[in-house]
Image (cartoon, rainbow, N blue to C red):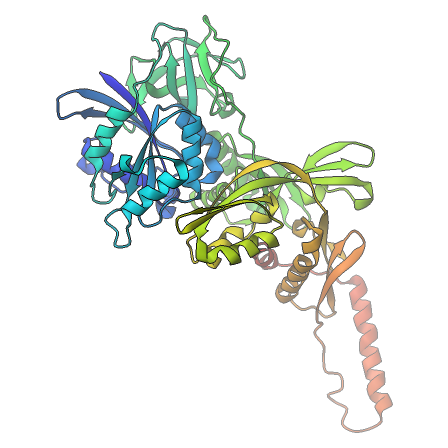
Length: 595
């Protein structure tokens, strides 16, 4: 029996999961009872947003018109830039890919990035122009665009519709004809690439593997290359798309291995499995442990929910090696956790899952990146928490992470988008014209795209622009920490690290917003934004005042002044002993603003 291993790669919302549904339907992998949209998307959030977050592999049986039988292993890939490394490992487990392009949208930023990932991995690429049944579809234009950008001949493209199933037989034939069968000897020492994993309460971590060399079966003694930890295989199997137990997996197979691994960090994506008795010296190249790059504080609105939040975070971490958290305390928000994520979408998904699946009400502080700080004494340390930022007199220089940002958009929107990128301290690398579309490549500080950049980009381009990025390294920046004081007391949860040029507008925005939401007291409450000891913006919550002159009708002015001075002294006395309680809504209002 012949084997073909392939992936489907595409920009977000180009119909990857829908096309996978039609392939499964065509090959009879879905029973009538199992039929539903986005079969391979297991999370409710994935279906709602139309984004694949957790990849799901599936093994399919295909019989050609001439009677030949083939086993097709579809290795689904996550569909967002945050999961770029996971996509690269999924591609490494394949010999070929279906490169999907929306017939109405054309080539977009992630299409190019994913195509180059496949080319770098030496994979056979089958171009598929999807959604040809849409009224605005231009299949020939999309295929031509693909040829101009990536260099894949337009005549090789297959026109298909994931909704109606048009083109699915042609795609299956192309997979068999164009994608090479996997190499590798079943007798060689075991070498298996981990491309994903999932935690099971009874079996521990189940690792998803592509066997490159050798054979793996129950009772085998295995070792993980990066950690050197030893395990004994309990079960092995394949996907259909649920877990099915098999006797063994041999070279070229895609399947799962349960070996009593209790910690997901012991079986990281990209690591290599080998035999304990016959160890290998050359693991699969490109492995790197998952590192969070965006950090944010998560606090329960009710302090009694702290224990429940900790338990929920621990459960989520069991399935996600890239997610990290540690306890953190804030004077304003109480006890919470500092969490690390792969990107903004990852952060959004974790927060939404905590609120939905575990019924928690949370406050998230402003997201931050990792800054590298060199002190006057030559010491270098990294921090992402504004609370740990040293005072300016101790700092020699501050470095911030930069990204290479690729933006694809129609040419009529180039001017406003370039202006937005200039505002975000971007510097142009190159500009490419592809038909009526333009690719802008800029180098931008990572922190500048964290807040509302994607929303602004979409609104400026009327939804037509798409973006993709990769972190390139650190550069020196003029960065400062802006502290917020309420009634002369610091509110640590609202401190932000920002470029010097943007410190004043950001400080102004926060103090004005706080002044709106903090309730009035019997005395005026100053709200200040400060850099070091210097106040850069101030707003005042005006005091309640009784009209003490109401009983004065006519008479001498000195009588009115006497009453007003008496009131003034009372207010001053009140201010000396008065404290301001900042309500939870104030933090929610400030932290949910776009900037």
